[in-house]
Length: 87
Image 1 (tube, one colour):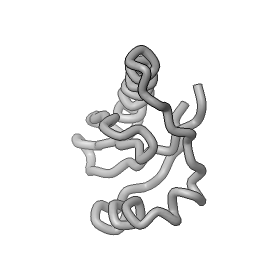
Image 2: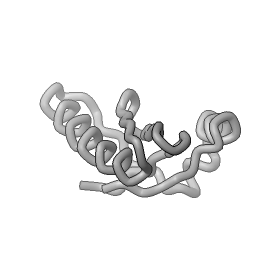
Image 3: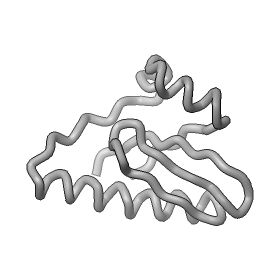
Image 4: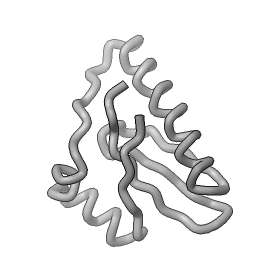
């Protein structure tokens, strides 16, 4: 699977993960590690569903490319999210 960059935010006991290049794909967890584990599963399911339904699968952007996206920058500014590659 390709490496997709995730945005992670939250606080102990409630972390969230979203993928800017996989709209609607998100995960939660009590810890960052748990949220990332759930995010890997969610991303795999999202990609499988997109393939099965014939939807286009966007190429994952690098962190540098994402940092040029105004929506991503706004999300980071509002939530304090950090980026992490997930695969």
